[in-house]
Length: 437
Image (cartoon, rainbow, N blue to C red):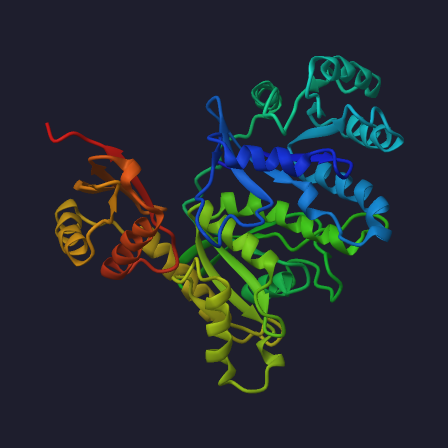
């Protein structure tokens, strides 16, 4: 099921990123806190009272340049409103109601989107009373919170969950669902057109010329596929360059719907921080991925593939299993390789390992590298089985899951991938306590 997107919006310095970090650092946030995947994350999956949603920190998406900060706030909130399913609007009880708050509140009222109004920095009883001044924004009851002291956060999350729109489950199409994601202007729409062999979407050399995600069904060598194009953002009027970063919000939704993501980058620029952000979400969502290096026609020496691949591996070292494919969508080269790689990744996600094979392999894996001791105790794996496919999910019965170090989890995943040839997909490992009795 595609998870709703909840965006935290508001003026600079009202506590948006502090709230996001509070959620990610607490038990309500479902994240793998491993090096390379959570640093500088702008989004995370959250569960609260049997509801799941993706939280997005718009504070991390603001431009750094002071001269464009003022005008970018309104533009960013406008895009967040359009992309998100629900909004947390943060205001500051110390500053009171500002003209910018009123302007943003007007945008939110006109949008019709559900809004939870959080009056931050209510660090004592008097400041809690001061939250009442925000009733004049006509966005419902302002909720006093203190992100610094972690007060009012549970009530805020209760309000967010109550306001979440119903998201119907994705219909099973029987097709391999492939999402084309990446930064603006790397050639995503052109890649889609090259795959389909016709002009399915508008192609332009300006960033952000495709307005909405477009689904296209087709067949490739007997494989039925559904392509989900997410080629950026186009809005009426002027849009600041920094707003293009909001293409990541559309990518999140597409990745949730897909089996395999094609992360498109370009040959003239190595993998960027935004590419790594999107790749991290693909991993977090346990989806398959193919890294597509487009515009390879602009690189003259073919031997540069090895050098470029090494550089890509360094920048995406938390996903060493991802296949890298070089293409020129403009000239139609390498397109078959992209589709073949996507099919191979999908087939890996459908693979099932028998319980006897798995436990036999686990004996060798544990013998080859025993779990490290934690306070004099060691993790003991008593039994293992594969519970699900797409993604491949393995359940381990162990003496104490708290004894598992993230580095040993990574070792187990790498060994299972190597022994059973799981290509291009993360493996979901679940550890459950089980007594010997």
